[in-house]
Each structure stands twice: as structure tokens, then as C-alpha cells.
Length: 132
Image (tube, rainbow, N blue to C red):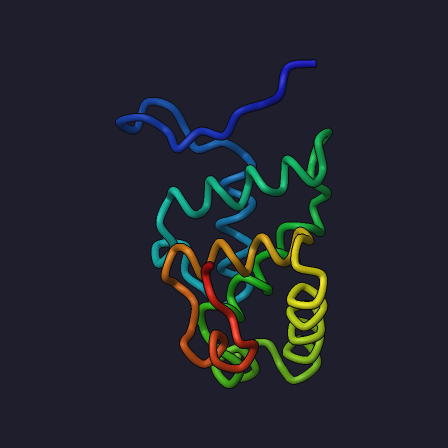
């Protein structure tokens, strides 16, 4: 089975691939404008998702990933004002688990935000994150 590839488009002649369009929509839903996220970072996110779900990431995975990523960038208060306290608690639990596990899918998303230098300083300090 040939793995599908993500596409950014080219000179307006070829459209963006469906996975990138889904991620853009999910980022908007998580109150993070997709233009604030570099294309290389979005490609990395969809590639991590393809590694996690080799056949096809489920549609519900995109908003879930976008909320985690949005929290990392926006920080706790800004995220909560957009998504509510329950979503904040859910994402914070996911990050705590990711930090404990060290090599989970969520940990890869958080680490990618850290390496891309997009992560909120408050999130880095709160969870003691470092890029070693």
C-alpha cells in the first residue's frame, strides 16, 4: 500500500492536501490561526499523525491534536478563555502524562512545539520542559 503524501500546493495550480486542510480547520477551531504556524510545522504534525494512524487519522484526531498544540502556543489563560476550563484541564492532563511517559504521541507534539520555538514560556516553565 502506497502511503499518501501531504501537499502544500504549488503556485496555485495544485491544492493543499486534505490532511493539511483538516489541520488548518482544526487549528482555527482551537482558536489558533493557521497562518501563525509555519508550514513545515504543520507538515510535521500531519506526518506524526500518519505515523500514529498509518491507514488514516480519524477525523476526531485533528481537533484533539490542534487543542494540544494551541495550548502549547497560547498558554493556559489564553487557551482557557477561548476553549473553557474543562478543555484546559483535559489538555493539562495530557501534557502531564506526556511529560511522565516521555515518548508518547502527545509528547512528540509538545516537543515539536518546543523545538520550533513556538511554545509559550509559561508552558515551558510550568512543566519544566527542555530540548536536550
